[in-house]
Length: 447
Ligand code: UDX
Image 1 (cartoon, rainbow, N blue to C red):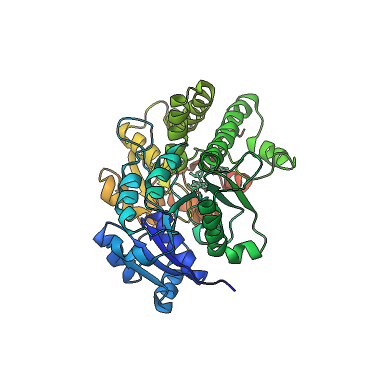
Image 2 (cartoon, helix red, strand yellow):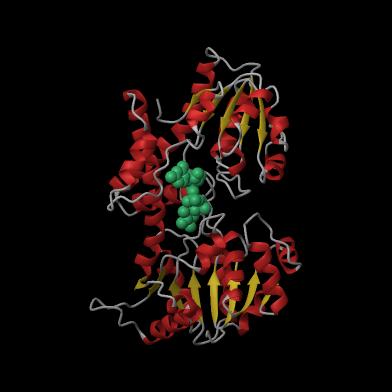
């Protein structure tokens, strides 16, 4: 059984909210802190501020147990032994680099509340070298900084937090002979071991390393995942030209133990609040460090990814003889991926907007994300009912592979639309069934 720690989580965005709830679920006493009154009021009233399966239940349970609280007052963090810093590191305006202002200001306001022996664990995704800069500030207050990156995926965030593939902890002063860390660091490492005791007992691997390596693990993991997706989209391009099929190709590649089956789905590419901005920040940092090749590699990954969005728009135009003006196109999906209402850097939104700009009459539907679209892109015409969205469409573009679209009956859908053409931007429909129902099916990297 876990000996409960007193924990503060600073920054209650996606990462911080989920982490606070997960830590309380493990039995710790947790206070979540954020500068937004609105966000804290929502969380304190038990309402999840975004769509995430399992979060509402865990949040309610945490509040009811008395182990989870929320506050806008950083002073309440003073009693905590362990502080997780989870603030956002968005892309800077006008450059690819990460904007670290929130991270530094959160650390600075925390400093006066630190005690000797308390531990600050950075979880935000940062350019390598950031932790060393923060470490000086934290150590000045007699506390210790460790780096503990987080790998959660939206839509599976609770499961990813409670049963991660690995726990990475970077500490300062790891000697070359191994992790014989300084006194502060070994105390800090023990604190992290206590925080994650439940998972460690279940056999979750713990990787102890130095601060820059821990920072780099996160950047490298995202860069690798993004590269895999763009690689498959590059293969899809070749497959399409050669009359081959990228879905069969991915299946066969995935059986190779060295490759593995995940993250090989070709389509309209990756989006979301993390991968796109993180690979840009990674490239920007590599350039700063004088490493030109990694920056060039990731620039190419980004370019291939954005190219997928442009290509499907071109394919739709081609289908209509070169112009989409006045054509009724329905885009299925607005979220950057299913089981999420997040539309940050969503390929679906980009495609819908591009078609609209070209003069198409676009209807956009999504089971969860429409409220977020309405607030941000008033030019898009939204339809919550799938049947209404299908009615009279001259062509469908499947942009997010929600189950209700994957399992859509092509015969029923065919009776509603005006034109039976479907662009399957996620290669997730049963091509044979759709073709048999009289649809013209176009996938990505497929014959
Ligand atoms: C990602 C990382 O997976 C996670 O570890 C990190 O902490 C944050 O960034 P997330 O943004 O939630 O998580 O989404 P993820 O499930 O990784 O998908 C990212 C994008 O890639 C989505 O737009 C998805 O549609 C796309 N994708 C994924 C593909 O196009 N093909 C694939 O094979 C897999």
